[in-house]
Image 1 (cartoon, rainbow, N blue to C red):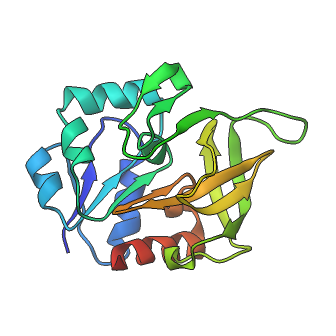
Image 2 (cartoon, rainbow, N blue to C red; image 1 turned 90 degrees about the vertical axis):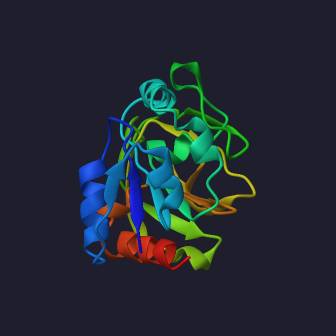
Image 3 (cartoon, rainbow, N blue to C red; image 1 turned 90 degrees about the horizontal axis):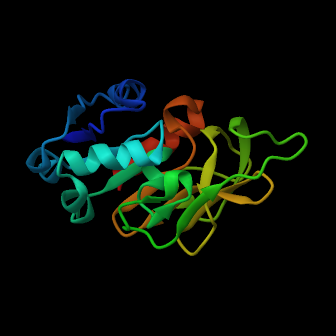
Length: 193
């Protein structure tokens, strides 16, 4: 199986690559549209700011190749947020693969922003390898709203989509590469898709 990790010039590329190496894969970090289109599976990683990440995606000529992907693809953290139409972060136009917008989390006593730490999941789609009550690791200040594509949620003052599925695209707002056995099950389910 060939696995392409999209090089967006920022983010958690190293830890994501190591997570897939644990499955015996040799992921290729690339910004080559042909290599991305030819891969069996594609990962859109992300840590950082939506505006900068989209600038990098545009500069590398990857907007249309990502939109056109027909193979299984996974956006992680910021990578999942970039799948949506817009983000409040820097008022950024994103890829528009998934309908909806990403908005800032609201801080409250006992609920700081960024949301950093372990949160319990409620799972609507067991095909993603997760179960109700699993804990996964989050590190984010923005999130999309729950909708028909939501596969799992965490409660952080509102229902935060922890995972989504739409056609060939999967998304994880949490960091599966840092979420222990639950994260590994999620990645394994994605690889089996």
